[in-house]
Amino acid sequence: MKRLEQLGVLTFAVGLVTAFAAPASAQNADAMNGTWKLNVAKSTYEPGPGPKEQTISIEGTDAARKIVVDLTPATGDAVHWEVSGAIGATLPVVGTNPNADAYVFTRVNAATLEAQYVREGKPTIKQTAVVSADGKTLTVTGTGSDAQGRTVNNVAVYDKN
Image (cartoon, rainbow, N blue to C red; front, top):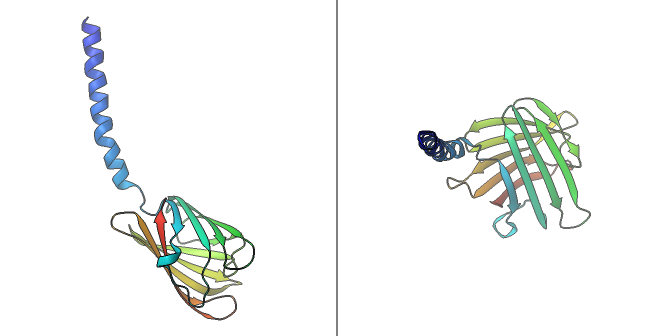
């Protein structure tokens, strides 16, 4: 009987630790991580037109981040690209991104990440991604020049799935 009481106390203690540890680990999770779907109605693209749809998947940490982009443009075939690696390193683009063959990420703060697109060794578009305080919206502002040399001023708003 004493053994059963000890197991009951141990089970309660483990449950209590788990209950308090789960919210703490959720608070420490990277706000960028998740699957984000473009809210076309809230987004603006100069020059346009913007994509019909886009999904971004972000996972990992600043030491080993992975970003996967699936995009359906206003015209033409769907495109897919991925970037993986550490903040601060020049990371190759795998797939088709017409404006970049490499990215360099910079962490600004817990809710903000910058990505400098590079094509053939030259900077093209700089994106600043900011997660809202409630963690439900990702706003990505892109400025610079695209691969065709056109001035870019985009604001893409994503909702967390």
